[in-house]
Amino acid sequence: MLKGFRDFVMKGNVIDLAAAVIIGAAFGAIIDSLVKDVITPIIGMLGGQPDFSALKIGAVQIGNFLNAVIGFLIKAAGLYFLIVLPFSRFAAKLAAAPAPAPGPSQQELYLKEIRDLLQQQKK
Image (cartoon, rainbow, N blue to C red; front, side, top):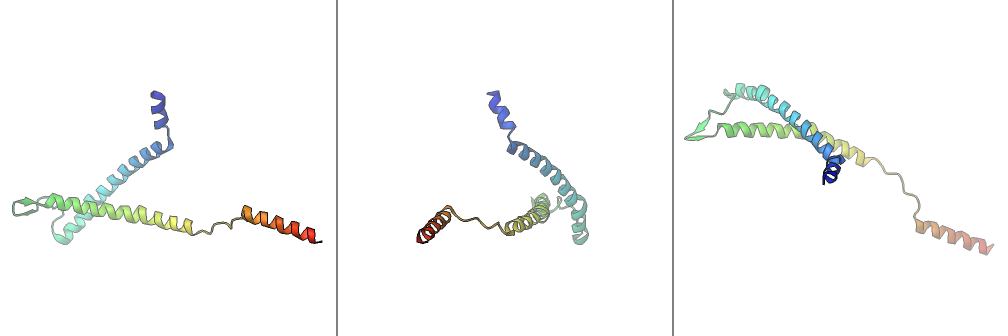
């Protein structure tokens, strides 16, 4: 039972996933700081209110929801422009690289042998 667990934990995919989660958490902290410390104050300068948590519509407190939506949109844009778009361009360049021309198929080789044998018989 422990051997199966050890084999599972030592698989390359599990280690890669763990590294991705850690890097993702660190990236999330950077984006949270960007949203809270840079972009929200800029929005506040433009709109007059940097933190929407006190915003109410009637009896409904919509401010925290607006903060969450703005944070999500900024995180999604950061993820797209900093990771997805560059990776997609890189993958497209790799895919656009011409593949080496394949050699003759086995059938073509057999046909050439037959042709050569027939030519030798005619001589």
